[in-house]
Length: 181
Image (cartoon, rainbow, N blue to C red; front, side):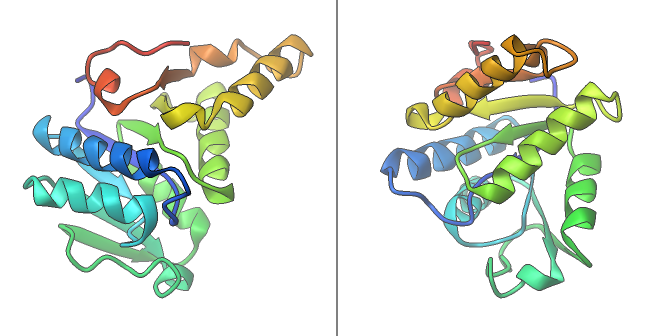
């Protein structure tokens, strides 16, 4: 892999499709197996907790970054390598971006989309050049991918969106460089 730390952005809920949880667990196992440090939101619930537990269960390293306001909401994970408690969501995202070489986006809700679009925007503006990987488990992001294509076709993007994002249908392909645009 060409990165040593990966920020994983995903749901604090698990979603309805069991494949989301399965992929989060496989991803965590693969991160640990490849010696890649997980940087994530610091919670112990949902897909966030699943990926963190999988890394820890395979003797990997996990750094959680959680804002004070979410300590009880996302149920801070006390069984990880390091937990950083920060003042707010903006500090959380900035710290996570600074700590990672790449970002992997799993299924999630509004917060996950916020993080994804901020990463894309910061990449486009050359604030950072983080690799962005979209894990499209069970086609979860197909409507979003269609919307990105539409924004491009309608002339609202400054560059081809697929220059910034690699799409993978399984966690395994992330580590085999078999993604698609």
